[in-house]
Image 1: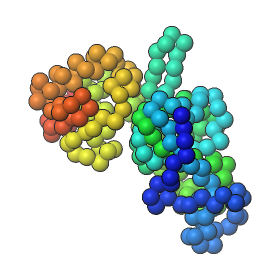
Image 2 (image 1 turned 90 degrees about the vertical axis):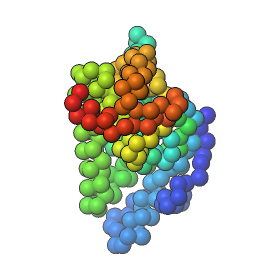
Image 3 (image 1 turned 135 degrees about the vertical axis):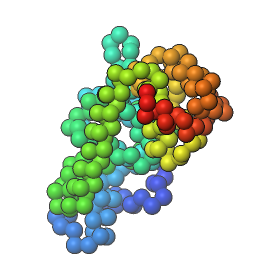
Image 4 (image 1 turned 180 degrees about the vertical axis):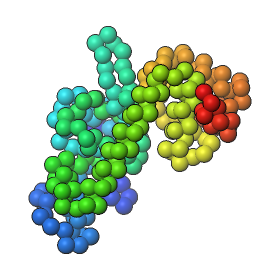
Length: 230
């Protein structure tokens, strides 16, 4: 069940009485107030809560404040593909007019909603906002392309690439606390959960990582090297 949460530290305060985007931005404060007026939340979602359904009108884009959010596609035969994970600070959903995927909380999460139409109006007048959104879209497209190419590689390559990339995104060089479930990771990599577990066990046997718990891993530098070779 979703519930309202407190705004993140440093977030712009929302002006509940203002819904109209000004036509010009004479100074930084005016721009900040305009952006704050577009915000809803952040809203708290428990693990596996649906944030947006596939096919819904994309009236909002999403900013992850805490936790992990996944975008996924369910198929009629019961299979599921987790297309992407979004971590705290990630802004996504900008480039879709409709929700082409389901958006769900992979862990307990807090998500800030930002009005799409209003943000587009601001971006049309403010180059910094437009450039910021372009950078986000480019990064997401690049990540999507890399993920698509990864699906043709071996299971070891997929798991290695995922762990190395997640480590970088979390800002850590060695220790990785997997916030999402093993089933989520397997569905993201196109593997069975048994194959994922066997691969991690094999990496541990080879000394490429140390498994301190089911979710806490320490990556060795050799894993980064093997990532280049696999």
